[in-house]
Amino acid sequence: MQLIFFISLLSGWKVIKIRFFSILVIIFLCSNLFFSCRSAYILRIGIAEDQSGPLADITRQLDQGRRLALDLLRQENKSNYWIKTMDTINSPEKTANAFRSLIDKDNVHLLLGTFSAENAQIGKHIAQIRGVPFIANAYDAELINESPSSYTAVLRQNPMQLGQLTALYFFYMMKKNRLAVISDVALIPSTQCALGFLGEGRLIGATMIEETYSSFERPADWQVSWSRLERAEPEVVFIAGDPSHYRDMLKIAREVLQIASIIVFQHMPMKEDLENHRELFDQTFVMLSFYSEKEEFVQSQFYQSYVKRFNEKPGFFSAQGHDEIMFLDEVMRSREHLPLNERFLNLEGYLAEQERYLTGFRGFLQDGYSFHSMDVLKIETESVEFLGSFWMEILSTGS
Image (cartoon, rainbow, N blue to C red; front, side):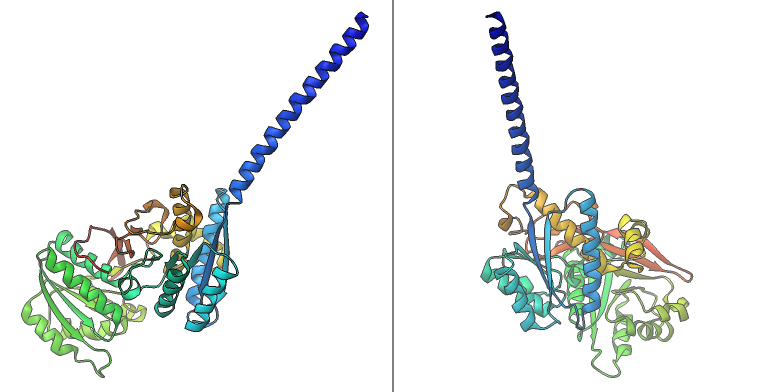
């Protein structure tokens, strides 16, 4: 009798242990299922860009920057992204078809692209109609202003902002009050840059002087414009135009008219001009949205990995591709309380985590255009010196 009771007791204990073990297994499997579901929470991204047309090289650099950024995120176990890219050959019709296909067939949560301003307009309209967010990496002054939309944000820095920051830099940092600009009215980015420079300068109380020329005229009459500038006696002259004109304009200003103003360029002068006319460019300044040879960029993990993987140095477009992915990852984390299809809506006023970005990206203004710091360079006889990145809050509104 005692033996039977003992055997029954042992049998009951085994049943209890088996049930307890089964419960642990169930808990373990459920927790795994929970985390698996979270990791399967994938952002589907659709990109429509020119892969085989006139902008193919820019697209290639953007793509390489994106791929490298995704690899960096995978190393941090942050790789919940599905990306499909479609070739548009820079055709508006193919761009429209690609964006529609990405939405209708691939069910993407977000549209990304394109470097062409014309095609970005198409992306904006499709995003608005279909209710899918669109991050544009082209700049067009009418991309948002023409029809403000919570669905579209412009990630690339605009030329007007570069002009605004240039005025702020020379007024506040260099203590110069008489600021002049000579701009090429044939080039829309140069015209926008000049408008930003003039508008911001007037708001902060500087004396502003404006001259224009047209590169459509052959030859452009730069001497007339420079002669009028000479009589105005500006402390700073900002040249907003194509670098192929810088040498000839500088010769007129310095050698013919002997203007003593500080000369500032919108773009880096042409390499051959710097090599062959270094003394002519001595003590001039260059204001850039991004300088790819600055030390902090060259020493970055991204730069080193890029050279090793692609056997070439990264430039602005590679860095922008990196920043696009980092921005998407930041928004995914900072707005994780929202559904996927809402996280990239209404980005107006969004402030970014600045240490993540290579191009000086700082966030979005209230109009949906991004804002960035500016890189300041000084050209001397023997070198080009990077003076640092500059940012100051802009007073004027509009993009």
